[in-house]
Image (cartoon, rainbow, N blue to C red):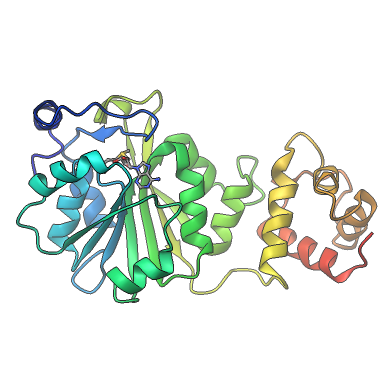
Length: 288
Ligand code: SAM
């Protein structure tokens, strides 16, 4: 086990390199030595499956991943961390560091160039300010991705694990459930980070599905519909979808009626099957 997530070691490395953590970049580094080995063991990386990490920070999780994975590719935005990583990961021949913004990178090109275009998994302690955009990008880009194991805010993990039809479900959860089977692995308290965030965290796992669980005629139209249905949570699904401008309230209500659903149903009460049927029904009908 590495010392890289022991509180004393983290403080010593930061002081020696004169580094001040950036709140804007979501830099809450792990200082609980049990978390990284558990994540590395559970993420599925192994001799046959390389792993992509987002935000290595000082390299605590990277080091643990390098012990189990054939190869680790880590994308880091903060270039101040590269001299630190050269030190903390020295001697590890299976780690490649890539400088860049994960949201701006061409992921298929990254997978081709650094992961031989083959299957891979993702394991990361995510910068919380961009949790949803990162997950959406990973899920919506066509990639040979097998699973995603990430440390996120506990509330975000719980929301994502709520299936469509459950009150806690939102647009992100519905999209996640279309692409993956989510589960909550274990909680991580706020005291496990330096500096401690305002909220507790949890390790979330997304097992990527080999095929979507529902059939939709047009995926782009389906995801647009899901976003618009959940955009105004206090409104009915029909009002919220109509507000996006593509369909009238009457059109949405007509399809809801065909599906045997009340006109005033809210998006949070719709299952994935019902969201798919609504999208397919609207796409089949005439536009205003
Ligand atoms: N893995 C380390 C750990 O667990 O201690 C650090 C995790 S810290 C929560 C998030 C990391 O993501 C930081 O190193 C931060 O600089 C990096 N980061 C923030 N925004 C990023 C982005 N858009 N692309 C890539 N890395 C980013």
